[in-house]
Length: 75
Image (cartoon, rainbow, N blue to C red):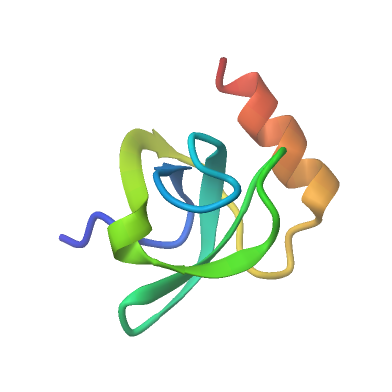
């Protein structure tokens, strides 16, 4: 079972958006397309993400507003 899958909520560990919570929208090789309430939509390396136990029902077509609301509801 892969931990880094579409819908996994993660915390970014590197870059401008470090420590921001985001969700994986798509994966390609060793990179993931992520977006969060305060994290820009960007492709990042799995090495720069720390997975959390939370999952959301999202994909690449999910709106930024819905993603922000879902992350805010996690707590």
